[in-house]
Length: 279
Image (tube, rainbow, N blue to C red; front, side, top):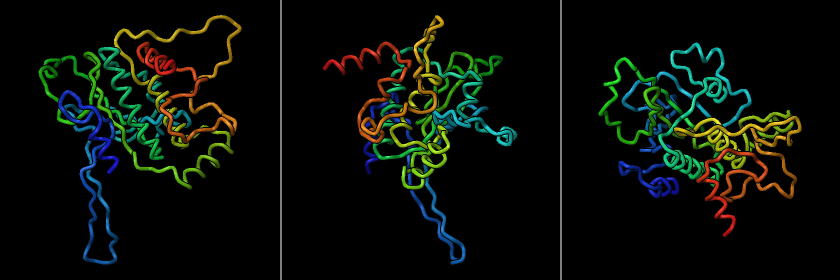
């Protein structure tokens, strides 16, 4: 019920539908068989983010993690492989919006959606992205075309069309996931994908800011010069370690990042945050 209320309460897009990037669930069904030896099957009917007008040639599953987030060689041999975070970076992909305002609107929706999941202690969600490479020899094929209702997409000039949405949103951070974080992550000194809800969301949004979204004319972050550089505290795959007194990894604050984390935000977002601090 809370999920439905959240989706319906989100601001509307230009088509009048909810602007959320979370999946829409249409129904939950149980398929039972006359033969008692055959177990019942539970089916979930949900929206398809890739039900766009154009064929998707490349797919990405992005969690914001850097640890072993390359598609395996076996995966790459498939007819429709799904690439991961490090592949996205290696392929030098970016979802480029036409204006800074448009980019900030999508970023804010990502923040609100993942905050909703974090407050319900849900993790392991991904941003699923489908890429269609525009056929420049038949550019007229792309003019005057209306996309299917409910499909979220962005067109990067005459190069690519990106379809995207958040998937796999029903995994709770329970005992099994806690054990995975401790034994496969902390004890092995690895920054694995599985993290508590708040660090998971922080890392996800950090990846979006650094590697996912941009806008036409956006300047790259300035590089530090000189031999004596301040110690780099940029979080690449996880948040900075904290003391027990500082550890509030599961609180419900609205902050996307720790204060020490060096992030790349647009001027509008920075001004908005400075206003909130001064109030």
